[in-house]
Structures are given as structure tokens and as C-alpha cells.
Length: 381
Image 1: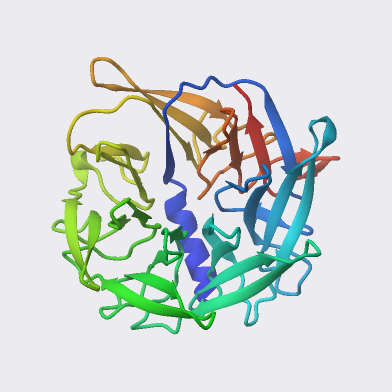
Image 2 (image 1 turned 60 degrees about the vertical axis):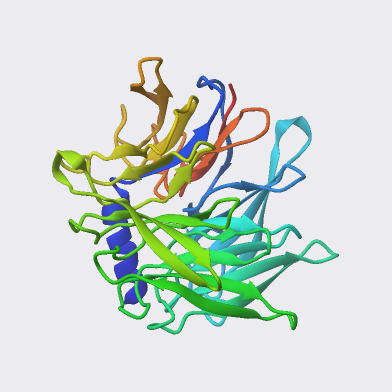
């Protein structure tokens, strides 16, 4: 019942959520190519970021299906092949037991090419995938949440710092039951130590839904969808201080014309400006993009996805261009038409070094007369 409720609650908000990426070069929509169409078996409904390794392989997760009885999700890989084709392989199928299930949020590599992610099964867990010498992958659950006070129901992705410490958020749990930020630290015996570095209490924020990011100084930045001075969410910063962490609310959203409900994470540029997205744009649930300006200004374009809307109502990839006047101009980079995907729920866009854009969608795509369960799409400049 916990998982079904969370998925339903998430779907309500993700219908109006936006995901974000800052990319400094202009990219025009060009040739589109579907790299893979999901057909329920052995995987369906990708709901994460796409992440590259050093060889150009693409990794992602699906929130459902797999040939295990629970149909509780997979980790997959797409590998470039001769002739511009892509080979598809399921690396791991969750069993819904001690290994968890229903992977959510963004995946992350460490510097040894181990792949980490979040499972929403039960109170939630963190898993690690390691490639073996024969090419197979082994899954290890490195931490299982126990509920309050150590946190419960993680739904965000992971961030890994230069010391291989892992950071994330839980929507519930913590000392006050209003969500927490946690840290997993590798130990010399191969195990992991979990530490709740901050528990939210209300005015400082409630219910973080998204991942945190880490800056070069080790500070963490993130959002809570509710709480703050006005109850409509916050942008926060956590600063390490002698083994403890100090939380600062950088901004409390006010709703109305000031917008609110930040369900996604943030991006911090080189000048310290913070960008993010909101589920409430002040006039309903159309959504909005915000910037907290620290100093200076920034060029470049912002790219992200919307779950619905666009010419066909199946979601979009949008582009925000920074104009010389200081204003931002929004254009629809791509309107999904179901055949090329639909409803990129929690799926940000990713760029490769050549400027090609990649995104996974949670629905859409057709193959041999059957409706697909999502696609991986590449768009070349």
C-alpha cells in the first residue's frame, strides 16, 4: 500500500513538474532517433536520468516490469554498435526482496565505475551495481532505511562527492517525521555508515522530494516542496561544520504571484546563481522556472522537460534563452507526439560531448503495432 500510494501521489505532482539542465551552447532541434522502445517485457516505464560511462554507454532505470514475479523494475544499458545501432541489455531485474525494487530518481557513478541508485521498495534502500570480469553485474543493497528517525521513503536521486560519500533525501522520517537529508560513508571493512545530517522541522522546510547537489566546498543545496515561512516550499543550503551541518533557508516560496511547490532539485552555476523549477506558477499548475541571483549574471540556455502540454498534450522539451535585456525567452524545443515518446515524468535531459541531446520518456513509442512503455530518444543538432 505504501508504494502504490507514493506512486499515485508522485504522479499527481509530476504532471506539473519540470526538470532542469543548464547547457552553455545553443542547440537547435535536429534529427530525432529512437534508440530503444520499451515493450513491457523485460522492462517498462523509464523514470530516471540517463547517465553515460567513459565508453559512451547509456544507463537508466525502469520503475516497473522485469521477468521477476514482482515486476518491480530494472537497470538497463544501451551500447553503441556498428552502423549507428544501439544494443539493449537489462543489467539487473529487482526481485522485491532484500534487493529492493521500484528504482527511482537519478543514478550516479563513483570514480571506480560502480553504479548507485535508490529503491522505493518498503521504507526504501540504496543499491550498488558492480560489473564483474565476465561482463555480468552484481547488485548489493548497501543500506536499507528503517523508518523514523533514520528516514523513510526516499524518492530522490543520489549525489556522490570526491570522497565517495553518498547524499540524498527522504520524503518522510527524520527526527520530526518531515523528511531528512542523509549521508552514506564507505567504511574500511567494505560496509557503509548512514548518518542523518539534517531533519526538517517545518519553518526550515518540509518533505524534500528531490536530490541535493554538492558544490566544490562540500556544501549541499536542495529544495523542500512544503514548509518554510509561508508553507509553500524552500530552497536550502547545508554547510559542513566540524562534523555537524548547519542549515540555511535561502528562500521561502509564498505561492500566488510568487509561485511555490518546488518538487525538483536545483542547479548552481559558476557565479553562484541557483536555478530550479516549481509545480505552481501562481495561476494554477502550469509550472514555472526560477532563479535565485547571488551575484553577476549568466549566459547560456536552460533545457528541461514537462510531463504534459505541448502541441499534442504528451509533454515537451523546453528551452529558455537568456536575452541581452536580461529577460528569458521560452521556446518549445520538442513536443512529443507519443510515437517518439510521451510524459517524461522525472526524466531530465542529458547532453553528450558532441552536443546531442538524450532523454527517456515514461510512456509512448510504438513498435510493430504495439504501444510502447517509453523510449530512449536522441536528438542531434
